[in-house]
Image (spheres, rainbow, N blue to C red):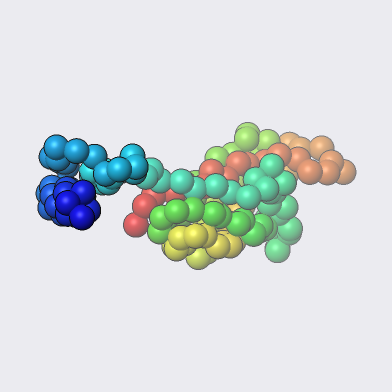
Length: 152
């Protein structure tokens, strides 16, 4: 009976000692070695911005003639991201079309919310001067659209 009383007193002392986080004080361990929780430690990390354009190697804007010197075309682009973003674009001529050809581009919608979505990227050329290009060519690279992204 005395042995049981001592065990109960030791167990109560152990429970009282474990009530204070981060510290255990006892004169004897329970009869079987049972791991006792001593503390919890938070695990943290920094989460960066991530954005990806799916199948970007397959994207291409094919210009179609709309009038005598005006060409336009669009492609759909799928974006995956972990933040709300704003897309924009710029376009640069490759120099194939000479003279005062005027290039433009657009992205619609330009605002994409995480986890992503589909947007349409369009390009156009007006005052297209074809006098110095050989007729009958297919898929001539006349400009490059660069899509840009910024968090919003």
